[in-house]
Length: 88
Picture (tube, rainbow, N blue to C red):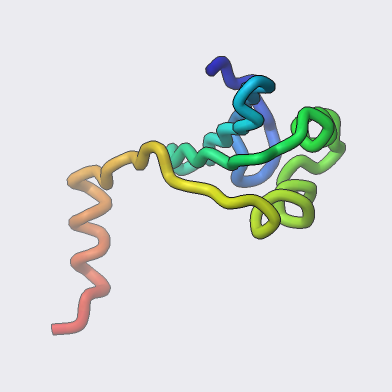
């Protein structure tokens, strides 16, 4: 599925498969989620919204079932950073 770029807060890109009624959203942290039973109109509204992040929060996030398709692993540097704040 081809995703189109979004420049809005935590959203990086989104794509839609009309025959399956499935939308993929890539977040700026690299995670990709699949949202099921999404109408073409919802996808169109997301892509044309002046604030896609707000539209996502209001109309998609908790309205549609989702699953994570991929997750970007933490880098070694972020693990070291996390170690600084772990309780002993």
